[in-house]
Length: 226
Image (cartoon, rainbow, N blue to C red):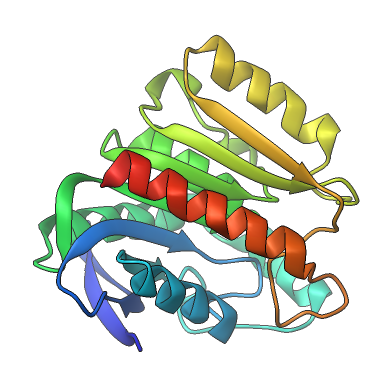
């Protein structure tokens, strides 16, 4: 099981949830929340990464606030300061790179829903990000559009054919931009809805898509991070 921690964030202090592997240090992964906040589902994802040998840290981008109401979640997402979120996520990268719990000189980013877009944005800000996994999310904020030429990471994407938020219209041009920039970009589509990985939401959870995407994600991160 993981624990709540605080860590430096460019002159400020951020908080988050840290899960570490039992067998010693492992590659670092920044896990980025959905629009609900740092809820138990995201903590569970961190625990699952730790069970696979990774050191996983999820920054709390809503600073203690969570919600279960979609309208409230949408308001929080759009009101979130991208500069503060980028600062806190960058702090998570730096903390992992300097931690005794972490191996290697690079980290991965894995984001869900709004976190999917932020995972790629963080990769564009920090060249130490060597692997980026996007789950059904592209950045909805104009100020968080990633500068593709700055990305050094391989990118893996998981998207649902029934997703009204991150469908082909939004995702396919991004995939083309990544490949035109010479980046490794591997996007998978599932016969599933938005948030199909979230097993706390039975109305959209797709067990088979979740299982397959998790297997690919773990393999991808081990391949690029060790």
